[in-house]
Amino acid sequence: MIKKIPWWLGAIFMSLLLLFTFSVFGADRPIGASTYVPYFAGILFDLDPDKYTYLKEIHNPGSWEGVMLLGVFFGALFNALFITKTFHLTIVPAAWKKYKNNSVTSRLVWSFISGFLLIIGARLAGGCTSGHFLSGMTQTAISSMIFGGVVMLSLVITGKLFYKDNKNDV
Amino acid sequence: MMYDKDTSMIERIFSMFATVTDEGHGSVVLVFFIGVVFGSIIQYAKVHKFEKIGGFAMLKDTVVPKMLFLAIGLASIGLYFMVEMGYASYHVKPIMLGGLIIGGTIFGIAMAIFGKCPGTGPISVAEGRIDIFVGALGGILGGLVFTVYYDQFKVIMGESLGKITLTGYFAEHQAITALIFGLALVAISFAIPLIEEIDEDDIGYQK
Image (cartoon, rainbow over all chains, first blue to last red; front, side):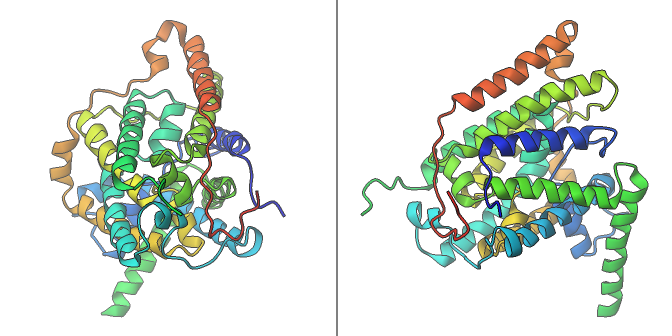
């Protein structure tokens, strides 16, 4: 069984999937993957869509992405269990141990904070890696190019400041 | 009480499926299938891993930008001609400078530390990454806070400066603009040197 594909093949498949989703034969809309989070939060905390403007605004895209992300999750679970066999419980990623620390508490606290910020940031910008980067830049949208530039800069600066270079290791 | 709450949650999940069915952007099965394919491409290319996204932040792995730029380059050329032939249309997000710059900065910081984005997180949770599950709880809280304080966040986002595209801006040379844009991204993708940070824990990793 195939367990890995090269990046360029992944890119070709991803471009075909984007085109299919955009097309009238597919969904006639872009792929997005961050609106579903506040949509699910609304369901989990039982917020009344009539009381919250935002829930009303995201009702349709939130539902669409909700179903799509269920596909992502269950597809990935199926692959992980039966094909790639990549399912195993871990807490601290290997590269975090290498470039940050071995602390479970540190990783979990930072995960919670960064997970929180990730959604605040994405919703402020109106999209994420999927909605802005993949779908937006495919349409040559200026908004998505601004987002892409800012994110890459912020990502690399944070990477430089937050992690240590592992030169003096071993 | 608990029973009532459960019923309403189940009702709302059914309403999610009903909304997708009525909306006309593909059937529930098709949308679910798009998700399966989307997730599988990412999972097989391994670009959801902390080592790939966090690794890119540390400039120790370049698979993520290479794959992103190649995918966008190819798709942008294809989409332009599909729109021209009437097989697709544009759905462009507005330029809201406050939201894009402040939101993008926060998003970049979070992505570097988390080593995930909102689309790749569920794949890692499905593979048993407990830290990402905890981060997803943080994300749900983020979604809740954003929903409740939407009016305040809207002030930060600012006014929309319009839904502008590069091909729309160079309206007289649309086809050539789309081609140059797409080919430039493909060229950038191949120009970025290939550096890889491997997840040593990944028992499924077959080089």
